[in-house]
Length: 262
Image (cartoon, rainbow, N blue to C red; front, side):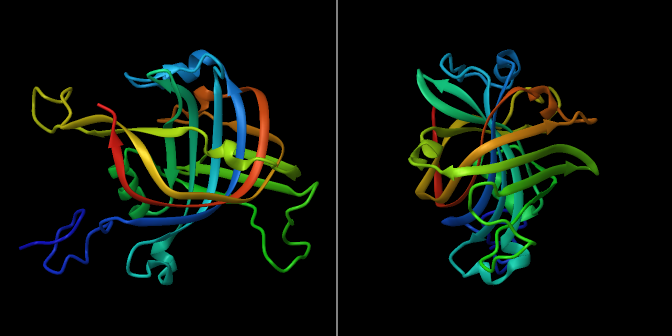
């Protein structure tokens, strides 16, 4: 009997792209809040989500340097467990409750891509880089201090899609605000049968269940971000019309399930 959580199923069950949960994550974030045209943000929302009238057009972009672990000390295999990711979260509402919606996300690791599709993240392949912090201070690394500057970039198919800069000002007094909204995803798996292309096998809104979610070393400051148009991309349709705060933080959480919203 073939074994595995994802394809490829195999005799030993070791060849699958992503093992069964629980999945554990830790990462460093360079984040940028900005505001786009409300109509552009609203256009990305799936059926079941509505614009948030209190924060219309608000978007948060995340550049993240992640490390993954399962139940087999996968972090000891860095080539598989380490990856970098970019995504945007758009403010929305679900049945009147403030939530976040992820319309676009890019990642440089196929294991992470597979886990993302299972969770409902619409991941595409991309290259993401960000300024890093090291414990040993020096001119090659900023410190978490007023005036420290961070850069971050996203590219896909050899085309630059995003560039950002963040300048730190002070620690964030109440970092719980970064975790205040649930993330809503759309699990969508199409049907490959003539006459049924518009009838997906799976099409459901789900709420991400982030267990033991924590943030640390959260600093905020000023920010700027540019989104570049490219063939086959619509990220630039969310181009900022005014800036918001920038931030730098570390985060960890665990994933065991998503909650279907019906």
